[in-house]
Amino acid sequence: MEATVTSMLSNDRATWPRAVAAGVALLLGCTVVGCASATPRRIAELPQTNSPSRASSPEPTRTPAVTEKVIVVTEPVAFEHTTQDDPNRDVGSSAVVQQGADGTRSITYEVTYVDGVESSRIATGDEITVAPVPEITAVGTRQPAPAPVVDTSGCDPNYSGACVPIASDVDCAGGSGNGPAYVRGPVRVIGTDIYDLDRDGDGIACD
Image (cartoon, rainbow, N blue to C red):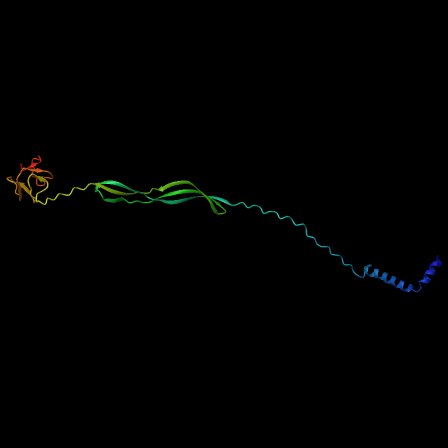
């Protein structure tokens, strides 16, 4: 065995100094840098992976804001026009005897709002707070007195049977009257005895 080692040493005598030098260098390298390789290895960077994304959850359904209010609205109430007969006025004439005036009413509503916008309105009350005053017009019903008949003959139309003159006063002829005009009877009174010729009121004057 010794002969074999000697033979190996003698055969590698030429390469032995280089082998020893390489071994020493390797030993020194491990001592100084802890046998770290001369060329530092680059650690492969692992690809970053994103964490699994959460599934987007649906937004919650928004509940509309619903509010209710009670409001009272005041409205005018128009007055009426009426008429009434007035026997103290002539037919064809009229006059307003009472001026009309509007009244007021109060209407109560229940109003519903959705997100501040009115969505419904329900009337729950209706009250006349001020009654209207009707306008009244009086309409005349009185028939006017007939116009006196003018006799162009000069005789008063209130008498017949004899011509009673139209004068400031007429007396029966032959009586105690002082005229200035006179009439001889008998005279029938057919209208108004304006001269007071029928003293006994039997409808016959100056008899």
